[in-house]
Image 1 (cartoon, rainbow over the protein chains, first blue to last red):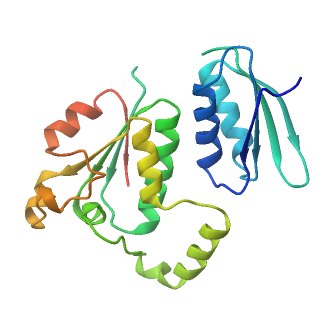
Image 2: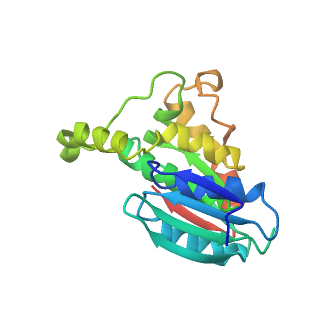
Image 3: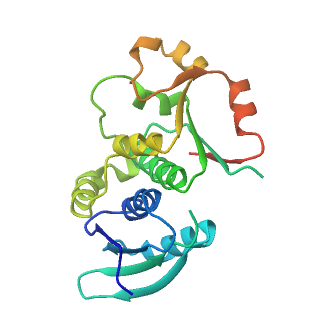
Length: 77
Length: 134
């Protein structure tokens, strides 16, 4: 699935990436796919915790050589 | 239960205030009602002017390494993190008794501080939520 928005948080330490994601989430709508790029190692666990709390869905977690990519489907606003 | 986090920031050392600020920012971004109460040495960081780095004696020699690592890894300053937390609704309060004994007046406080409060306010505001003492 194609991302509606890419959030580039590479080079930003915790809690930067999750904060960037939540800011993007505030401007998103149901059905959007947000793609978060990060280098902070906590991003997988943190996005997972956030998705559980807010009722959104992690579609994919991928480790590229230069970044961790988390794709999130917005089910709830 | 209401989603609420109160942080008593007692320590004035930079390592601890960084830890408190990271949690404050993350919790506030997640929608938690965050309140930071700066008391005793913790309040020294909230007067106007330059914020100096201060580490516990046993870790003092690691200061430069810490600064370098934080720069490399894109860790924001604790002040920036608390400002970010405030954008998500966090509040920062100064302890009135500490301010009084240290001769800190309202006008000496950094604009990041939302108000000067007493212990009863803390008890009331933190009731029913989680509290961290840092």
